Length: 239
Image: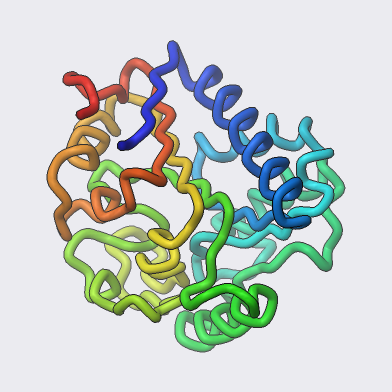
């Protein structure tokens, strides 16, 4: 069953989510000696990363990955890597050798292929697809997560797909790289953040019947933890 926590406002969402992610990373390190965290872009995750940086001890043995990336240089204002570097990686002092950047500048296809190889190299002992400990996700008003959009062919990539190139994102820029739905579903936990009234319908749709028209609804419910503010909270209790 999906675990949903409603908070008074966006700041409370970020605080609760940061503390939760830190606990999960520490648990992974205690159990397996290493943790694997994947990050997304966006305003709400950005504040969460700032607060997560205060839990630097939980990141000492963590490898940091990305759920998706725009095909822009790492220094571009739209780069998810840049957001993470400024809010979390730099402030927490995460070692460069444990940060695995999606090479957006390589283009969607080559970038996706190289990232899939990197995931499989580092997580060589894991079953395919690679299993990450925690993936932090936002949700779009259309119900998309990472760069998996409603009705897109990428949703049908199959259970062995790891990383995919996106050429026709409905949100600019059109070219992106994204982890596959299979990798999101294989993660030990996905932590999804939603704030603001514009996300309320998407959150409700995510918690309804699974549908290719709402990619977030295809995540594994028993491995999904959701933090929302009051404006984004579903009208009915989670079943």
